[in-house]
Amino acid sequence: MPTPASILKRYWGYDAFRRGQAEIIDSILSGHDTLAILPTGGGKSICYQVPALLKPGLFLVISPLIALMRDQVENLRKRGITAFAIHTGMSRAEVINILTLAGESNCKLLYVSPERLGSSLFLEYLPALNIRGIAVDEAHCISQWGYDFRPAYLRIAEIRSLLPNVPILALTASATPAIQDDICSKLALSEAAISQWKRFRHSFDRPNLSYSVLLVPDKKHRLRQILEKLPGTGIVYGRSRKGVESMAEEIARWEPSVSFYHAGLTPEQRKAREADWMNGTTRVMVCTNAFGMGIDKPDVRFVVHIDAPDSMENYYQEAGRAGRDGKKAYAILLTEPGTLSELEEKNRLQFPSLQEIRQIYQSVANYLQMPVGAGAGEWFDFDLLDFRRKFKHHAYSMKQAFALLEENQWLSYNEEVFMPAQIQVLADRPEMEQYEADFPRETELLKTILRQYGGIRDQPTGISEFVLAKALRWDKEYVILLLKRLQGQGLIEYHPKKENPQLQLLQPRASAAEIVLDPTRYAFRKKEAENRLRAMLTYLQWKNCRSKWIGQYFGDPDGADCGICDQCLEKKRRLNPPDGASVQQIILKTIELQPMDWLQLKAQLDGIREQNLKEAVDFLIGEGRLRLDDTGQLRVSRS
Image 1: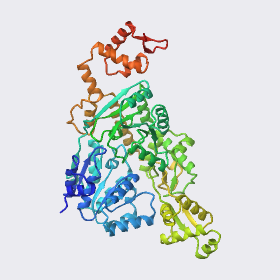
Image 2: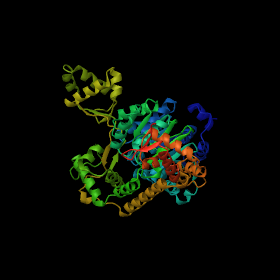
Image 3: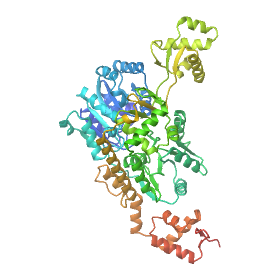
Image 4: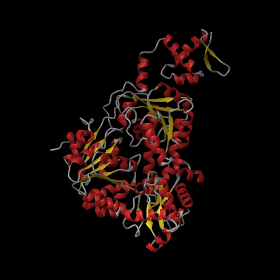
């Protein structure tokens, strides 16, 4: 009789579970609704994959990340485990094919994006799927208090009501107590059932991860010092695409092994840069928060934020990508004197007025050149950077406007979409015979398509240019060229695959004046965002153990001082201050590396009491070992 431990060993090769995994798996196998709060990289997927292999039927896994779904399906298949994925962008025929296979095969895990759950097609096939468990990844997205609330997640409740005896596992890396309660409430079958949930919360304590917040006059200079001092691979997070590219260019002047990553890159560029960073070819990845989700690299030695995130949830997840191997690692947040006021301004901007939301909606309609009453349900390529450049909306306002427009069912913007290529053959046999004499290669391709894809004359059908190229032993680029020629001749209707951000109109395009929002929801969302911002501002200014504060924020009140964050180290220094001679040596070594003025020196050596620092500088100047130049820079005197 297989056991969780034997399944883990057989398919993953591990001798033991990580802390907390075994208890979560036992809870699900016992039929309990379960909430698991596990840190980033804590092995959440094992908690539902192992039970899926021990139970008959299949597990339904709900995830918002298409790339992660595809990676997990591919990895499971490599281990000999049957798994499929259904996500935004698939054609009706493809979804039917997968749902049929999942119901009739030995499929153990079916990954579904939340947008697909409410479709009539999915609900039609649901009874035949023999679902024996449900896993909800990124479960905080269902909570109205969540920093990343997604309306599509509310459809999970409908699925639960149709599967009343199926246990559910809700997983997330970060959730405050209020969000934990809300997740259980949204997913419970009844009010009485809420209290029956089993909850497992991994400690938020990371004993090997040193948190620091550094107030610096020059982020580039301090970042260079950090990267030169710390060994190994790391991540540098920035807020904007432009800022990320600029910082990567700056770092490349003295660190050749650097690259940048953001959602504006092509899918091919993103995959190549991920691979280079994973295998160590790239040492430092400068990126927006588009990088890191689903990437498990255990030996990251540092994560540096050059811009403060707008929530502790985002910061904890991003910083937590350092030190997953249990060895010493650093999470460093660089701030400047204006950071606090900048965050407050960001909060104001990210909640635009109804008038501004209507203006943004009108700009979208103009960008798509969509007349009133048209476009309902259609997907459109949507280049966010190009849109901003043309219509001059602020990035923060635009992001929140899109979220509110989606919540009120006007439009949906999805940065992560995969739509396979589609073809419908329009040519009949006489047309093909007439075309064959002059275009034999194109005709050979057309015949191959007809052989491999049934029903392709009746409706648009998803195809793979790669599979066609392999069957014909041609280059994929050549196949794409011929498909475009066939399209130009009117013999097929060809839609190339899409991996670019997409925007969907959920209703026929309205006039701007028709756009209305739920005022209660708007006020609530604004208030919660302000609360999250205040928590981030508190963290930046916190004068006690940072690790302990993070644990308390997420509902873990029992943590002890970590002893390794900047505040704990400062406390140790205050209790055991260096003598005057030691401070002098530290100052000389610092100025030797980089001349700086008094304010820069004070920021650089912020762990030394200002009075001790001033006395040491005065002594060194008096002794002639330091000097002030004409620009006010402190320099080491040369004898």
